[in-house]
Structure formats: C-alpha cells, structure tokens
Image: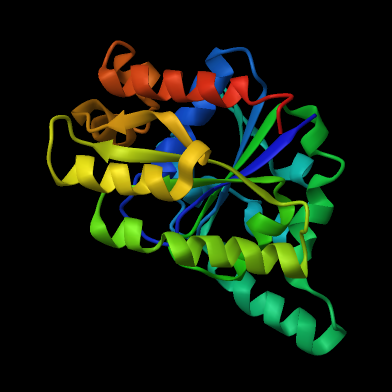
Length: 259
C-alpha cells in the first residue's frame, strides 16, 4: 500500500526540503519506488533535484487547480520521480478562494482527487510544503495518509510543536480523519552535550515513540550537495549526512505493516 507523507513544519530553516530530497533518495536506493511532490512556491525541492523551474511547462500548480493530471507533469529522474513546482504555484491559494466563492468547491481537495489513481504506482509519495501554514499546506495534508514532523533542536522549532499538532488535528476534523502523525525526526543535531541535547530531550519527552531514533547531524556535505543540485548520496555517499539519512530511511521502511 502506498504511503503518502507530508514532511511538515511551519517554520523555515529546519532542513525540511533537503530532508525530503535525501529521504526520497535513500528510499530509492533501498529499492522503493518514490514520487516527490514540490508544493512550495519557492521551488527549492525542484531546484535541489537539478531541475530548472523556468524550463518546466506544467507543474504542481496545474495539478492543484485541476488543469493537468499528475501523469502529464511527472518528471522521471535518476533515483525517483518528481512533480515539480513553478512560480505559478503562488497563484494557487487565490485560485482556491475563487473556486469556493464562485462554485462552492474546496480547491484544497483537488490534489487528493488527482493522486487517487496515480499514487498507487509508488511505494512512497512525499510532499514538500511551505514553511508557513497555507492552503497549499492543507492541500498536502488532505492528500496524505501520514505526517512526519521535521524538528530542529532550537527553541522556536521545539516551541512550535503544539501548533503543528493543532494544524494536523484541524485537517483530521475537517477533511482527512484518516491522517496520522507516524513519525518525527530531528535535523541539524550537533554532537556533544549542550543546548541541542537539552532540546532533543524535550522533543523525546513530548513525542515519545513518534520520534525516530535517527538524528540528522550537522554535516557540511548536506548543505553543499543541495547547493550543487544533488542529493547527499550523489555528492558524498560516505559522509555522516548520507549515513544518517540512510538510517532514517531504514527506520521508515521498518514501519511498513505496523501503521
């Protein structure tokens, strides 16, 4: 059964997009068929995958408003498939509002309807979303079966946990009662004892078994790889960032059949 996951945080700078890329790459290397979906108007995931958004003619924007099917937009890359984003995606929120005002339609539901026949071709579908709460975030959560919370061991990231849980609960109560938070992971973890260890302990206490054992440690190769439009495995497969993302992907796979 296909797992459709939103990689989720409503704060920027936590490593959500590069984690979407590298988890997708790791799952692919472990034999899984993966689709990544860029639902962020910044188009960072698309760029990190080595795709020029300016050269893309149809994107997640067209899927989101029902003007194209996923199979008309999908790009087949070396490790995984991608539904890319373009600058047009910024207009989707306004389009959703107009759909409701003019036709009584809930635009945020369209992506789920579009994926119903397409997602089963994959083992994993992973959404990358905006670092703020928006109707595009809701569209991803409504289309998903699961949520992974991405948490940096910093005050504002940890402090936002209650808001993240509330956003998921709101979507569960309105449009997607089957949505589950099935995992959380810590990024940008420094070694040693210090504030990061204190915050990581707080997250562990708050989330319990939802928190994966693997932390994504700080690693220069992770930042350098995205700057070079590569996943960390293509850039430096022996670095600790690659080892961490592979370990995290193995934990994710171990969840299969238990959710």
